[in-house]
Length: 580
Image 1 (cartoon, rainbow, N blue to C red):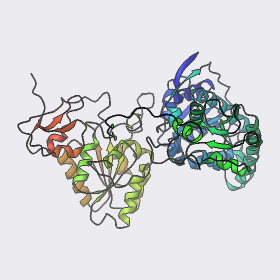
Image 2 (image 1 turned 90 degrees about the vertical axis):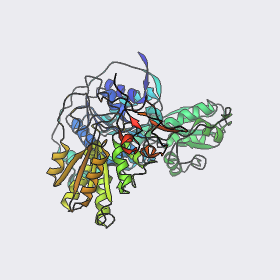
Image 3 (image 1 turned 45 degrees about the horizontal axis):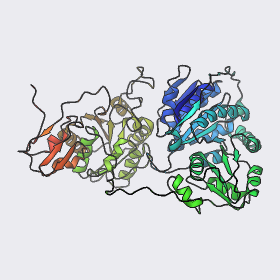
Image 4 (image 1 turned 30 degrees about the horizontal axis):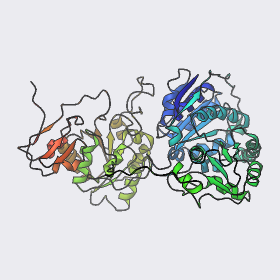
């Protein structure tokens, strides 16, 4: 049956058809939907893990038990999972294991443009890279074949454009192989030095075997063109740009197995064309390989290692520039992302901004607290870095002495990698105040459950971590909960905890305003007679409030009636409509 699927959905379908029975992931755009789609198949056990390292280790455990497994993450999540990644390259697998990673060229929802192909080469693990939904399905199935044939985990690399674009796929029935028996093999699976030294040569021999496979692999294909004055080597979404911009004019070497790459086949392709160009996003990964083979090749001299490519850019560099369409008479104003109307983080961030605090931030939708007009965050690095960074900042004398520094972290991010930072604060007697922004969900990636919500990936009731009890259990004596809609309570809590001569945690608790079960109050309205157009209400950056010549105005299609704006207005201009 042929059906239209997102690349991520197609990858999940490939897992299903290949007989995968275990999936563990941490949500991260643009990878999230692979696991969400896989969870819809009853034959697959699927879960959200607290972080990517746990997910990869769990998937390895399932493979060890003899079942085909998968773990998924975005590119920066692979950093978190790098520890087990490099070692399971040595151990190999029992049943097939696929590691899904999705890169984000253009940084649509990420803090860097990391190129995950380097991980494949560094960890010496094969990587498949689909260029559309059909290949996402096919390569997921191929990945298990390679994993079991070569005794290795296999990386399946997606990217934003492949993950989130739709394409036609042809589905087939699920074929689930019999569970492979687990055999106790210490020299294969126990990576202490004596055994690990003997496994490294196995990895090197495996790489040689994979290079030989790459020479004949159907996923590495040459598409001939009539004009051999130029030959193009490309991969992933860059292949789509090449075909859209240049059609079938020039020969194209399309790489599907991006690591390890063939050698002789590339040399033969290079010899068949007059000029050789690599079209790839981000780093010159393929280009460097070609240079190592002694090939005269162009790549990053034409295409920047920064941002995404496009068919327009490829056409401009290698073909006929695509004619631009008519210009708009009035330029479209930029629309930077903002916290939603009624977002529970807004009141807390207003308080931190008002108190002129140094705020060590973290990864989540609350990172938007850094934007105008709140400007309430000073640093954002990676998941969990706020808590650890606050400790270092204060111990170095940056903020502890004047009581002007806090860390903010979401509930899901806290469970991901903030917990150990808090243990460090308690253990090393750090007089630091951590604010956990508990909105009862993993908000940034689309409302996934986490260990604090009380539900698992499939929505079934699950064990729920008690944040207050956890913080006290690791040694934090001062733990309090505030409602971020109550500005006075927020300010009182922050002032008191910063003044305390010990570590403390403030839990700012209110559910995300976009959760379906959250019931909102009636939208507020502005009394024109009372509004003085002082613009105090604009300081919270609520998208439901705008300023007109007549004064403030509330968009009642957006307003959730949270009341934060009314607490700022000294003239009582904001009020809810009277009932009846």
